[in-house]
Image (cartoon, rainbow, N blue to C red):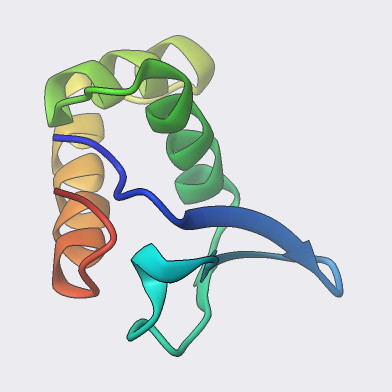
Length: 89
């Protein structure tokens, strides 16, 4: 999967938020606030282009002291939220 075109991560008053820019995000109409971990994963997903729950989990394990099982569960939950708000395809 990949992040849809037109969605960016911005710092707004000290909060990391996903917002839509341009025509690709016309009907998004909201800001999605991310915690530090989710923002880290978003930036990695953007760099990677095509990503998977497994690839994000590996990156999370490399950056934080977390078990592979916990990383998979956490990343799956974050990616599910991204899918619900339609910012990944």
